[in-house]
Amino acid sequence: FPVAVSGGDVTAKNIWLAENVLEILTEQREWVLKSSLLIAMAVYTYLRLIVDHHGTAQLQALRQKEVDFCISLLRERFMDCFMIGRDLVRLLQNVARIPEFEQLWKDIIHNPQVLSAQFTGVLQLLQSRTSRKFLACRLTPDMETKLLFMTSRVRFGQQKRYQDWFQRQYLSTPDSQSLRCDLIRYICGVVHPSNEVLSSDILPRWAIIGWLLTTCTSNVAASNAKLALFYDWLFFNPEKDSIMNI
Image (cartoon, rainbow, N blue to C red; front, side):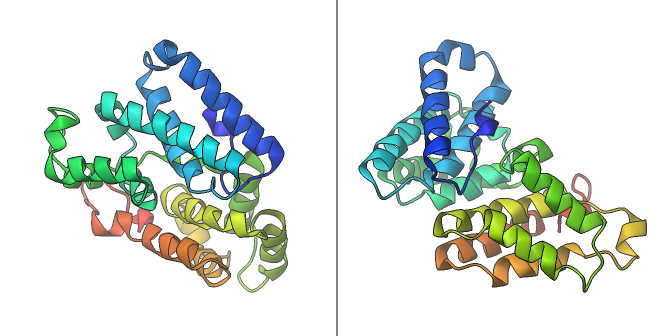
């Protein structure tokens, strides 16, 4: 259920949801620790949300709780979090200036064994592909439906009105710019059109990614979004990975 909390959304309703889900996960820690997938999904979700929560005193207080929650699970159950794969590195990089994560990064790079005897270093993590279920969980069902519609039904050259609608609906506020990274990772890792679609005049993935990059209004979000394109390419393994990821 951490999946229900949206990224790039600091409305009162979503903040309330983020706070209360975190409270349940914290209070029911023993139950959380019984499921490796729940540990990984919770860390993946809240590492992503930390980026959005800054500014007001309420958001700063929530952010500190999220930092404490993620750090405790990463330090106590690192190999459960390892299942996230290379996107864990991406998310940790986005929060690297926060003191607790700065210290975690030092351990990941210089002293990986302190996190787990099975962990050999950051390269091991970067060589592990992130499952679709993690990439998909950061989009709302409605967002996912609209994106899949654009990549399977809209013809190249006729996309502007759909893109304008998507922009107005999901990407029009300063806080929502961080969503572009999630959308690009989803397009790279989940949206894999058939050969029939690839050879047709349907809107190609590169055109949507180009639009997401060129319409971004935040320099930080734009840099993170560009970097999101390279993770699968840099560590591509033809024996295990899909060419569609790059």
